[in-house]
Length: 175
Image 1 (cartoon, helix red, strand yellow):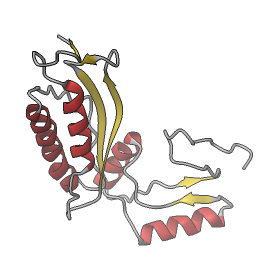
Image 2 (tube, rainbow, N blue to C red):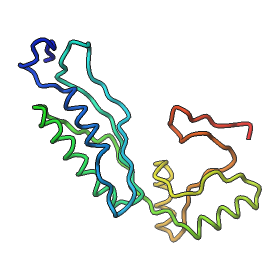
Image 3 (cartoon, rainbow, N blue to C red):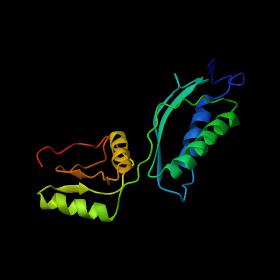
């Protein structure tokens, strides 16, 4: 139950818990076992400037270049969420909405070989760096590697000013 800000004592402040969670999540120390990314993409909380909220909802994502980095970050993030909520007298329900395994990208020799080949064939290579993106790529890469092949995700043909899914992403179709 939400309470008016003039008498908040009966309720616990989910907005404060949410702020602590977000701050804690972005403050997670990175692991030496591999690069990982974390992002809080959606926050739903509040219904008025004078209402102490009893609930909030966060949607976030964790990605890693290695399975070890995810194995380090996931339980750490869960502890931050649960403890930041408890610090403000709230509880947290964590619902995992999906997960993608990590696939080792075959670099740097394979990256260099494929980049040179793409350029030789007339493609404009935009990015050939290790990537934590594209779930469909990860599943395909794992299958290729299980059969003795090498995999690499790189972008060709069109330049773009920002990362996919960002507000500045705009594929330049004229390239």
